[in-house]
Image (tube, rainbow, N blue to C red):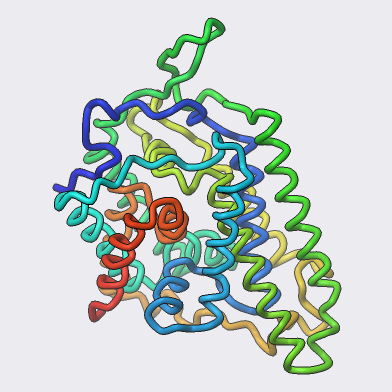
Length: 363
């Protein structure tokens, strides 16, 4: 069994402060994730799938995917420079020992192979697929989420202690992780500023959709701006929501020990997937970028997956199971993997090597 580095020793069983239920942080982060996925779909007609971004951007050099990746990295750097330290994910030191390297390569390979076989991950299947009412995405999500839940509960959570908070006297005490933790004023200012600025920029871009009617050059510029901005929103959304924090994800899976349960990420279902459903299927106007013919603003048609539930086979199912195992062991899926690669470049080199190697295996 792989022992993942961030949970491997008894001295690391308690997570840091500010890691309890964060309803405000996660709601704002989920709205940014909604903006990112919805804007890329309705602006450029494309699905924002993080596993596909890594695979196609790094293995095949797809310019469209590289642009979104650049946006995610830029959003992460913006958070590093300007966000309060308490908002940023903190990772255990990557010691580059043989055990850590082998474990990181192996889990990266499992996630890479799994997402390649099931054609997606949490962003492509959950955020984008469920909001489009894709039966194939619903089945993939049910499989990898259940697998991750079982994996985390039986192999990881025993090594994780209760959450820690400071009492009125400033002393640390163990508390239930489902108790709410609200943002400080610096955190709130940063989060609201990011949300307002990103929303304003995307509205301006959507109102300039007439540019796409004049020339291919302007249409390409629009696609590039939308892709880059969607990537920035996605990266910032992952950080603010807590999805980039492995311990927070693992605690979301703690359904057998409620004192360790952090329900924050359930709000992504409400404010990420829920708002995507509303926008994709009900709202008509400049916010969703579509013109009267219901085409993407800067593309001639939507590039949606053509496969259905009838195309599901053992390859697809086994891929969802593999991805669920990797996600449950590490608390990291492809999008947060990009984020951690910025914070810890050496970890990123090793993990991305494993991910790309797994992705390259025949399906």
